Amino acid sequence: AQKITQTQPGMFVQEKEAVTLDCTYDTSDPSYGLFWYKQPSSGEMIFLIYQGSYDQQNATEGRYSLNFQKARKSANLVISASQLGDSAMYFCAMREGLGGTGGFKTIFGAGTRLFVKA
Amino acid sequence: GAGVSQSPSNKVTEKGKDVELRCDPISGHTALYWYRQSLGQGLEFLIYFQGNSAPDKSGLPSDRFSAERTGGSVSTLTIQRTQQEDSAVYLCASSLQPGNTEAFFGQGTRLTVV
Image (cartoon, rainbow over all chains, first blue to last red; front, side):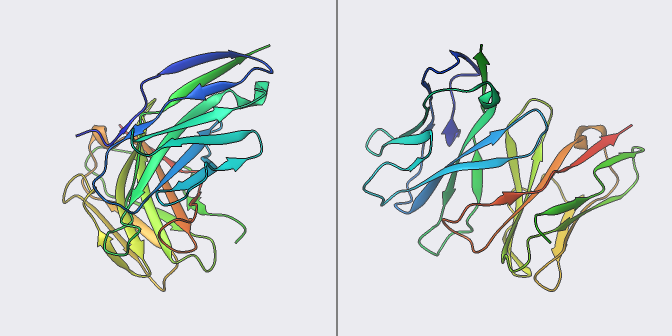
């Protein structure tokens, strides 16, 4: 069963506008972490933001924020004021077993390719 | 080192040969992960190490795949009798500890089986 779902294979956004990349997840583990990574065409994986399942506040890192809706099991990434350099592949990921009993396996979604237009 | 280092960066091998892919994690990072990324796809989890032990090997695709880690540092992913479907980018990542800390990725090894 698909544990991380990213339903948008590709997204376009105008430079300077905000964009939301969707991510839903499925887990029965009460302790888990959610991550977003960026993969530019160079291939490197760049960590963007993290949200723990027990965190009360939505995570923010500069222009990135994570819209965490626990009951709906969604963890959407919001990029504000898009820049041309934001054009890349974006992966949502989940790590289960933070309670100490799991193997800390991290699973990734299929990704969303973001294109920022000038 | 400053970051996660993987070698070789590119490897072309003939079908049926064995290959070894190396990962040198960030110094002091206890957790190490191997992933596989096929062209245009997401990341597929292969194996995770905590120190030298591998609590989770569930992602290894077949018994042709094995991995080890020595001294709590360098890890080697070995693929025996390579097949064309093994062609992919193999990514290694390390984190200070397992759990909620971010993982830092290497640049990957692009494996092509011809």
